[in-house]
Amino acid sequence: MGSRWRVIEAVALPMLTLLFLGLWQGYRHHTDAIRALRLQLHELEQQQTEGNTYNLMEEQLEFLQRRQESLETQIGDMRRAQQRWRTQERQRIQRTEPEPTTRPSLDLIPIP
Image (tube, rainbow, N blue to C red; front, side, top):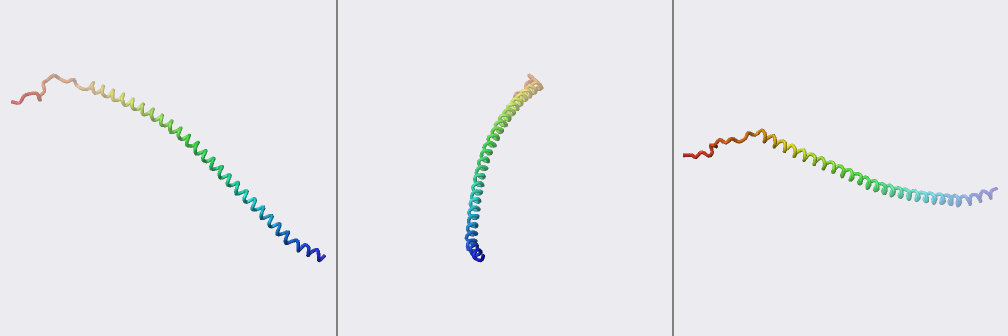
């Protein structure tokens, strides 16, 4: 019985060492795999963000173009309304002005 324990003692330390090294290698392998997956995930997120940024910029550009067209239309309408108002104002002023009289002006009287 004593020899059995000696064999177990002799084999136990190398077996535990091998078990520890195997677990350590497995841990390193899984850590590297997780690190690689995180890197891939980060790259995919960046690609998606860049794609979303491009799409967002396109949407903003389209919105700004529509807004510009709308504002140009409004400006044109306002210019036409302003022109109509000026024309109406000129006509009103012309109607309210008295017609010039034919009396001689005092400026034309010669001074003796």
